[in-house]
Amino acid sequence: MTAIANSSTATSSWPQTTSLAPIGQAGSSTNGSAVPTTPSTAAATDKVQLSDRAKAILDKANADKAATANLSLSFDEMLQQRTDALTTKLTDAFKKMNVNLDDAVRLQVDKFGKVTAEGPWKEKIEKYFADNPEAAKELKEIAGLNALKAANAALELYNKEKGASAPGSKQQQSAWTAYNIRSMNIQTLSGVISLKDGEMRSAAMDYIDSIADPTGAKAGPDPVQQQREIARRLA
Image (tube, rainbow, N blue to C red; front, side):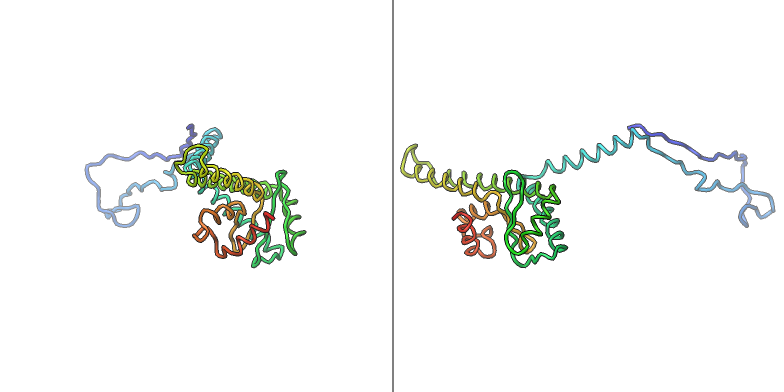
């Protein structure tokens, strides 16, 4: 890294003496002879300025550091981080539009990135996403990542359910049939997202969680209502 340093350090010539007379008032000795004063701190301070090239290198180093920090995140951590950021952004925007967030805001994004909504705030919400394409793009990507996560969970269920059964056995065929049905349902629900109480949820993940862990922590606050909503979406 290159730095340009401009020094303005003051210098002084000091007499060499074998002894110093006691000091009384500032700048004088007790016998009235003059005593040299110490150079001021301000005058002795060096001023350092970075060159444009050095600043550019420093900026790149900071950017690389931030990128490296993100690489250390797991898939789930990265997805949660992006989901939380978008949740905060949408919550603030919807509040400004007087959208009642006590009820779930249901959104659906298609493969082209167009966002549609349901309920009395449909027009407001759809206009917001039309006017803010970066938010629509982020919603589409988060929905896609959740669908990918759900598909992976479905595959894990298939491997668990088929167990060590022989190829072509009834157990494996049954597990394979269930896996295909789940995969199609995940695809159907892949673009469906809900926002309620400061939490964004993926319908695809809710669906696979309702199968893998129907009464666990992932089932949400109202698993029965959640399953009804999923069934309505798949009807």
